[in-house]
Image (tube, rainbow, N blue to C red; front, side, top):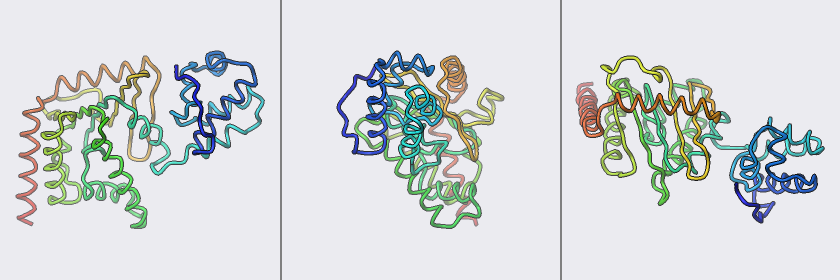
Length: 281
């Protein structure tokens, strides 16, 4: 369990939330474990909020306010602490990626965000938001590129990616954009020892993740978590039995995929195919 530490409560909204939660808890004479039991979570979870290591949750903040008799104090602080540059439904998962020791992703139709080029990300964003102003599109792209810099960190997580073969063939942004993206994917897979990429071929047939994108995050000091995403929504899953089911399904997808070496050859071949098509148009 994270030990109480001295925070500057004015450093940022999350630190202020953590400091206030700790103040209210101690005023009530409760330990982290005792408070957690009364709001149906672990004392470790309470400790993460107090240490400003996790983004507070609005539903939990409401329960804490009611239990601690703090009106809507923690709920209001929660709204401030949850502000993020990424979509609200993805914000918690984006933060967890920063703390993860390893990340395992499955993508059925597109290259995962951490390995996207700017042009590819822009084409995907424009397809998802066809009526948005260009400035909004650029903000999304800039944020996604910032997320990709996680792999440049000295403490970068191990990233294991399984991509369905369809993602190599669906043309996003035109053949030139696809050729650039797949060449970049091949380069990252070959040059970064902490990035492992496998392609799940069409011949693998049906599997549990056939119509979804899944990100599994593993931590040195906390249980794993899962994030699933669709076009306009996503869900963070932390329920242990369900997380275990996702992990088992991912293991099956990984076992059915081509080896990293064979996958790399297939990615390079697909990049050449898009390059040829781009020259013909």
